[in-house]
Image 1: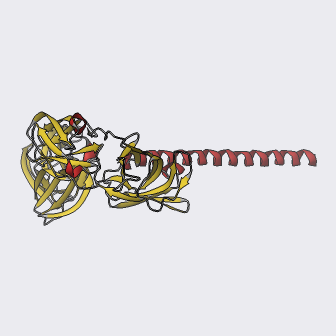
Image 2: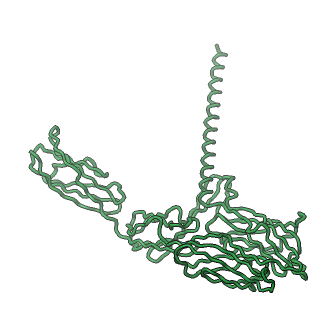
Image 3: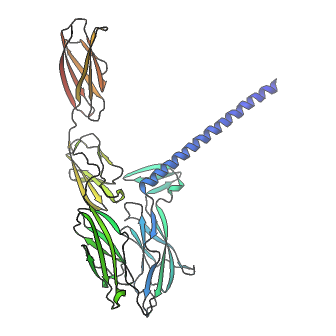
Length: 455
């Protein structure tokens, strides 16, 4: 008998332990899934940093009497992902020659040039070079078993996720080749990163034109068909800038012609073409013109025809700019009492293109609506229904006065729909009712009405 009892309790103990393990396992699985979902949302919002080479192989040519590049060779790496790229830090991890031998990379410098990375090389002798470049933009910080994420001006703390370790970091391999040009100097080349751009009326349009085959772009002559001008190049640069001061609506085609002026005929001449479509700076969703103190104002700064990653919004009030934010998600601002005007300024690639002003005022008082009336003979009562709400449809506080006094009662003192019951025991011929509604924003309204009682 004793042995049977011990076996029974031992089985109960095993069942309890197994149950605890099952519950703990399910909980841990749910927590892991939650952390993965949060990490996925953060990746979507802050856009991982991605580095790519501008060209498969950057080529540099030496004249017959040169043993190394006379000016520092510059190799460019394109950065994508973050909206603000000017603070990305670049560094050279490793340099190898064509045979795979590791070279001293301490004389290789890196720059951030308009958001892209530039590797400035020392004097290079003929050969192939493999440069490993890393980029870093500080947005996430690991602290123990948690990570701090900076989004806009707010820092959030989430559980550590290995998949987020690479969001702020990326590497790219850049290939460069230095070779003797022999008797015939290299062909001049022109290229553009994108052959079709979108722009808006307002700011000047600026385009990078990349050159190859020459050491000094400052000696190259340019001509532009379609409008705009070429800013003079500087020694050591690999591109020049085309500036179109006053873009016009519609689709426009441009052809840039260049002449290296080396006396080499066709080898000195090159061209590049691209198109630009200019849109009016109009809101995709027309924002309201009026706002109210204490009531959230939602502003959607998306511009029709333009990508959201190129847009940002500055907002402020009464001439004071408070903050700059991405255009997605829409801004929500709660105006403070005493503000006169909200100002939203939309930026396209850093240039202001659209401004929207919102006049601020006291919120409208709650409105009282007499909905219906009904004679209830079974209860010997006259029943009246009224409705009221604040500007956002929220509840209000309601008070009641009646004449004759005390003849009517409210079913509640706060809400959006109210029932008033008039007692008919004293057989009144009429009743006068006065309602006062007060909302959370301080607004108040009064409505009075006389009702004749059917006999």
